[in-house]
Length: 326
Ligand SMILES: [Zn+2]
Image 1 (cartoon, rainbow, N blue to C red):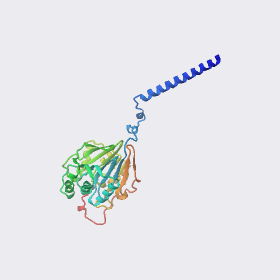
Image 2: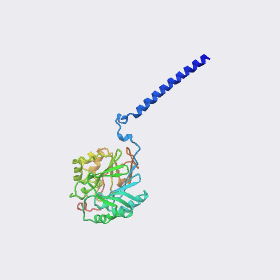
Image 3: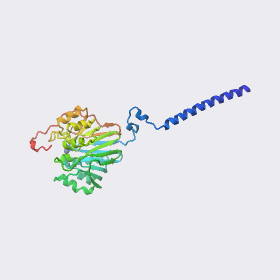
């Protein structure tokens, strides 16, 4: 009997010891977990990696609108359009938006009043509910300018872009980088330039901004270094000065232009610099509409990069160099 009691006591002791060890372990774990921790940064991982997966996907569709620009952005249940191509491509644009279930656009940006960027905006304003139309401080004596002005009242509000202004779009933040002035000689330099940050992924939409605006952005210390660059002005050499492309140093470059366009876009010097910088190229003249998806830390594309680094070729018809405004 005594032996049995002794055994039971032994067992109790062992059980107590196990429980004490367990309690100490749990206490240790609790203290460890409650410590204000910077463990995620110990290995040099960025803050973004600590919040991976919390961002809604940002889709950027670079639409093949021929010689012009139009990009549809979707994040969560919000959509926006940066430029709307020309009048000729507006049917395609609307079909594309309809096909993606777009009925309402939080923002429509008219980068500047050239017809290959704002030509389709009046029809977009007629067909969709547009909360905010964002335009540059520019006046033109052109039909596309008057058409957009006439449809201003269809937008919920019209906002003139100002450098430093920010807009929230889904989980992304949009910052206005240009135009810094309203007295440029070149219409293209009025282009609204937007940086879009989505987690650690970044995009730069440049409209047709040229050398003067590019130099101003660099001089002002704008952070133009991005993952995805919508190459300015359809790859024209009047834009994308070397210093600007080097500062942008994009992983991905997108050129929106038509095959055999009148200007010979994209131009060889721009392509050379992008290639030297190691950018992967996407071009709507070769590939049609291209789409990328950002989860806030990674960007994937719906197709392989373009194989061709060929400059654009002008059509057979000779318009004479004077007719080519670029
Ligand atoms: Zn253009």
